[in-house]
Length: 458
Image (cartoon, rainbow, N blue to C red; front, side):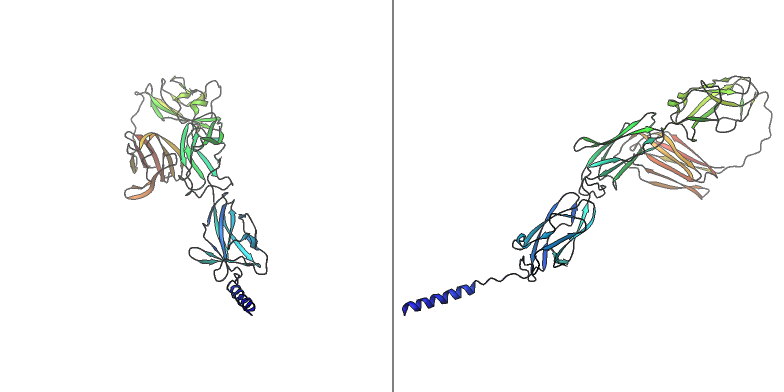
């Protein structure tokens, strides 16, 4: 009897112990919890950890009646497209995500072809789609997009575009700190990738060259040339020389002749002193023009001014010939005859009193701290005004030239506007905006870093 009692008691104990260890399995996966950064850098994979739970928050790998979770994306590269229960340990699994092209992307997890709701921590926001933004990586290669040719003496724009290793333009830059050195025509620019908006950096130079020059880009961090390009000069052929001179002058008294050399497209040949020939001044008269030769070195920016005298009292015309050529070169305007008079031949003339023409002037003075102005270059002249470039021979880049606008008035009537601003090459562009059919525009560089603009009624 004692033996049977012992057996009975042990059986009860075994039954009680087995009841206390009943395993309750988690329910089917209902949520995925994740804490992540939604920004990916192109070409840099990121591993993201997910926690799968049932409806009550229990870690789960219960997939119900299906054998896997499907993972789909609209453009991201994933290390797996299917997740099996064996890969989910205590509800945890990982997914490696990578993006190549900059843009907006998303990921979905499907269970039985239905999206699993994702809880985004720490806010517990619920979403069926996990969203990502892929931004460009650091600049890995550079393309020089400047024109292949330049016109000597005229502004030329250096353009350099930056791309990451995946080919994305480098537009988003807050996560980058790269510097490059750009050299062109003897100039050197140090550029940080954050110094400009967009993927392209550009600035202007004025190459007074008659031969090719190169643009080079050096990555300062690795001290390596990453791009280069040879820029060829556009060749200009001499087509005509314009001569400006007084209509009346006096025997033996100096007068000024201005010559302007143009190419076949009607553009000033600003490097005539390098590619031109000496100009011989011929006359239709019997006297002597002294001197009658203008050396090509006398031309600056395509213009030469010389003082000459004539020795005979007569009516003459003056026309240019290139040295070594027997034919007169075409002139900008038809030749005008000039009446040459001596003092004794001058007659008393009744002169009509000219109408008083309205005019005004504006003086712009630049502080010496900014730098020293070297010269003025005319960029363009149209019916709407004239554009100049104020070129500094010395420039302190610690000082910025703020944009300036001022109305041009004559007798309290606004007739135009003057605007100047700093350009990327740290020189200053000056726009004089008036109707040139009604007004003359004159300008000159004055001492003490000043520029004077004069507007006069025609």
